[in-house]
Length: 379
Image 1: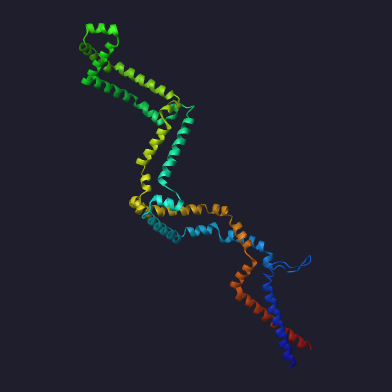
Image 2: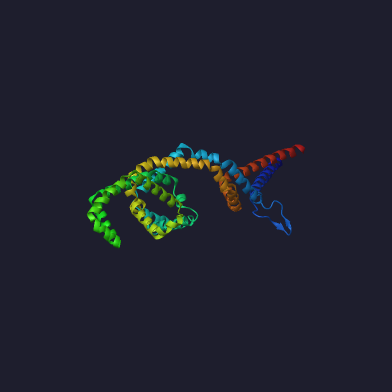
């Protein structure tokens, strides 16, 4: 009878020791949360393993996340999966249709989302400010430049190419006018004015020639002059010389003819009347996007989604590097309290920890049984 009690006693003692030891070892993973001291001396095994290695654990977790969990290859593979691309494309289509068919105007959208008051007035003010700045900068930079230097080369070439056409047009207009009755009448008026303003000389000419006779004599000669080939050469040379003189003039000379207020006023009027954006600001979106809704949703949006995903994939390495993901994980884990970490681990592994405790008790009981048998054999 004593033998049975000895065996049972040794088994119970071994089981208690094994179970308590394993349970204590599990608790010492987290506890105590901070080191304990007696005077200047720190008690051994304080704090617990995880609190003691908290910072090191945070660093290693950060490295593991960056090296093995959140990698550019894994994210890129997920982004380029057909299921993901299709779902994003469908979502973008729905949102684009919803936006384009909205009854809201651009002005109201700008006001609601960006707190922009009176967007039309703001646009016009920005255009005016840009025109004023551009005007000042252009003439400030024009001090050392000529008109020929400022004009685009294509315009210079076009003007020079069309100078003969301009000469022909001027001569044709002049011939047609002089040959007309109106031109002849104007010539008569000019002769009368000439004679009246030249005193004695005018009176002497009037004594010998009447106005009609002078007109009849000068009119054919004037037409002859206009039809003469030498006149064409002279006019062409005159136009060429004037064009060269114009190109050599300082650009700043034209500033007195181009007032800033006039430039700003003309630009504002052109924007209000010619640029449809101003009219679009006050209209519902569907009023001007209707014809484009189908094309935008079915053609542009899928292409935009594809291009955006490809751009993201190509820049993932750079983006992850700039995010400093390892540092973020380290900081978050370091800021995570040990109590919360213990609660989290136990909520996941409580059953396994209990099994470890029971296993310790079982092994301890087995060891107690073996020890009791050895004692009996020795006796």
